[in-house]
Length: 208
Image (cartoon, rainbow, N blue to C red; front, side):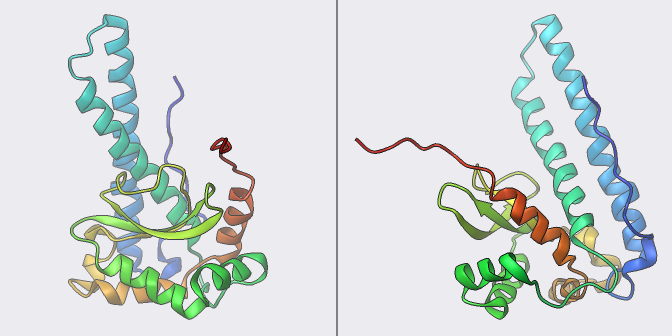
């Protein structure tokens, strides 16, 4: 069975300062993200053992654990690529046109995403997703790592709203963290994800 691996960051831990401290990045990537990878692999092994033994008594718990840890791995992997030193500004090209079409302009998009992140109860993420059935961009809250995401939604741009993403630097001023990341967005990466997501189609059938 394939093993998941912790991806290297495309920049040094301190590269996103002063917006995100090097200490936070070291703990966030090297400890938290690494734990999701390790736990996802462990759950996959346990699922394999359960199949061999034909003992499915713990299947529900294992499925929940896999969803939690694998989703944590995927979202963090996207988040690191979404960010870059000296990033920010605003997107260009087709992605900028889609933002204008779906949100009425970049400023409204920015305000909505920041508000969605700021109003998450407990732990979770804010995400910009491509919804292929309706062929539109949506912003959604993701509780923990794995719930409240439309099933076909393709994450393009994600904001970590777990306390471990900001607390050492921003304490309880989490909205300051969500504002700070607007100076770090890698629009080239996000635009490329959008272009790739456009190729994903769902056949919902045709009305009689």
